Amino acid sequence: MNRRDAVLALVALAAGPLVSHAQQQGKMWRVGFLAPRRRPVSIDADFLGAFPRGMRELGYVEGKNLVIEWRFANGEFEPLSDLAAELVRLKVDVLVSGSSQAISALQKATATIPIVMATSGDPIGSGFVKSLARPGGNVTGLSNLTSDIGIKQLELLLSMVPKLSRVAVLVNPVNPSLATFLKYVQAEAQRVGVEVLTMEARTPQEIENAFPIMAQGNAKAVIVGIDGLFIQQYRQIAELAAKHRLPSASSIREYVEAGGLMSYGPNLAEQLRRAATYVDKIFKGAKPGELPVEQSAKFELLINAKTAKALGFTIPSELLLRADRIIANEGS
Image (cartoon, rainbow, N blue to C red):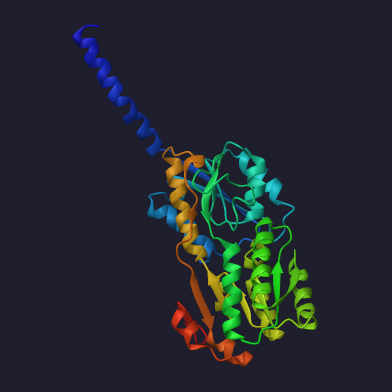
């Protein structure tokens, strides 16, 4: 090879990555987002809007270099498999979900397209990843550690209701992560001498039916497991808890804003924003199986003082000091 050929070869070699980078910069990225809930009237006004906002923060703008294919199962789980298959057929670059049932449907639909968990209660127990440090396969994302959250929620209810003797736990039996959640609550309840009444609900009507049974079963409080259906129906659950005068604990702040007594858990909007960082890394070439699952570092405690007063409870000073937010009245 003469000097001229060698120089041309080096120029071509150096230009290769630049050309490739330019092509990537001009690419229209496609993300498939699957949720079991109903589509909100406005995604931007809902906590789901944190995901596209997170993408915008990273330079991905819908209509310019990003398309988000939203799919909603309208509160039913049967359509998830078909919706997951539809997203796979669209050949999206990354799939995203914050529901264990939806993540499971996506995992069954593809072993090659990367899947980002916006939230997951028990990713190892649910079979989504091999380990948090080295997920393996095509799934990674965030874990909200809901198994341990149940213990903390019981502790908070005991602080508010010192003579609590029986607590109901609302779970969706088709959500695999809630089985572990329930076991943790049952073990802690047995340790502190509290009986557990397990209530299962798969539909809004079953949620409606569960609360009179709780009251008849002499439950004095209720813990709401974190689940796609329960997140969708948080207003219904808050209203039923108030109607049956049951102090309650959930994992999402929106529940307390709707009139539920308290919530303890990660900020779902923040997790959806963080999920965007995983999508960005995968767009840039990272392999999902090599991206460690991120565990929530911050958990928020919200208490609705208006609801506590209506139920006849005084919020203990230690809870007032620990709370990230106290809702005193409408819109506060």
